[in-house]
Amino acid sequence: MKYLKVENLESDSQIKIVTLNRPEVKNAFNPEMISEITQTFKNFNQDKEIKAVILQGSGSVFCAGADLNWMKEMAAYTYEQNIEDSEKLWDMFESISHCETVVVGIAQGAAYGGALGLLACCDYVVADEKTQFCFSEVKLGLAPAIISSFILKKISDAFARPFMLSAEVFNVNQAMIMGLVNDTKNISLTEVAKKFSGNGLEAMKATKNLLNSIGRGNSWAEQKALTTKTISERRISAEGQQRLEKFLTKS
Image (cartoon, rainbow, N blue to C red):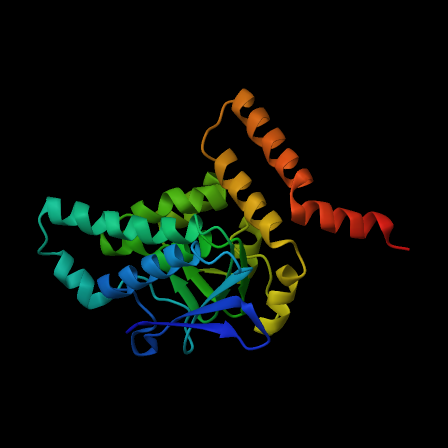
């Protein structure tokens, strides 16, 4: 791949590391990178042995959002071309959000515009204490439209609205308060992986699927059916039986 690097964590082959690899433009994404990210995360769903995916950016900045040259091209697009282009961007975020395995985001330096959409699609986010965040779209006469659905699944409207409308830069403490960031410690990738590597692989996937499904506007009766089905399947599964027996019989 041209703009993405995918590798195994050295200490655990069940942990994948995806690195945005355009440091010369602060890992800004263009159509090629968007396509690579989308296909990579869709492919992860075919590998049933992956326990977690770590998404990070190379260099000093996690991601600056959309590439400037791509934005210049967009200015000449027709409405129909913009719809097609925007749908591909949506598909990228959805591929991360709906990835069956746990996705951990590691942010440093800055996360602007669409980069916040990437972080919102992650299940757990660690950021450097000096990281700056910004919904910068309105400064450019645009709107944080595609990312809004993914952002509002992660944080409340009360937190997102003032920053989306003002394009004000905010810090990691504010990002933690709103729930966009979960941790600010300077920890190694191995330490991040340890948070998930000891858990049941199938159990984590079932939990993520449950959380994503409940968030799709299910009725109360549908939630009852979904939650009872999930726990019943886990109780009789080989993984559930084995882990429960180990827990219940330990001295």
